[in-house]
Image 1 (cartoon, rainbow, N blue to C red):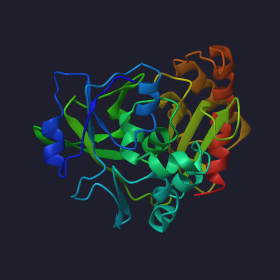
Image 2: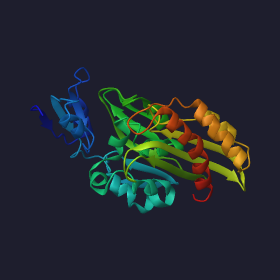
Image 3: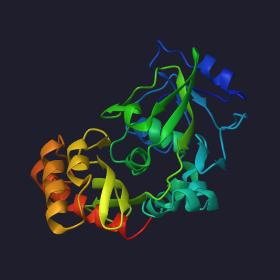
Image 4: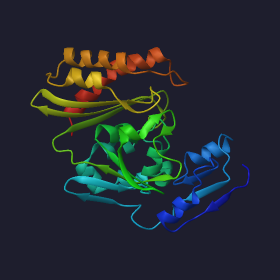
Length: 285
């Protein structure tokens, strides 16, 4: 790696001021688990890294109020994994953490970094989208909120401006929604997925009243599949319904090929796993 400057501001305002929006070699760094790999591989060569580790002002921690969760962007994934508040209000999140990379990474990687990196193989973004998650963004021009599904715009691309930072993730009250996440890996259980499918289902008995279906890893970004959602809404759980939803998902998704599988292989996975994720959701909460 080439030499670079590392600065450690104490406040969010100072951190934003240190990020030069016109210089792509100046970047913020949270946990650094992904950024350091990019630097070691020579993909990214920074001139300055603005560390967010020493920021004060509520960038870490988990709060629950009225059923809604607020998770500070600098909160480590391992803290989310073991949080009683998260387990109570959004139990699907702790469940996915056990297969999200390994414990060493989860101890360092942060919630904000997992979202801001824009990697379509990450497990948290599709689940956050299925749960209706939003991010609070702070920048030189002030604050704004954005749905996680609108934050992700492409392959390693987000709607964040160069001098904006994610301050927190908000997960709304889930009510009686049933949620699940299915991850298909070509290697170990905690490997990068070839496919991720997250669902959130509202049901009345055995009938689905509404559904959110999200695909990741097999696509350039985590994204909702509205055709599958329409196929599920108002239908009763059964093989025919799930097959129809899976076919709709496979038809709608713009699948990409990579080292984890061909487009045809991933499309077939999606066709099958939409139904599996819905059945899993109906068995849990």
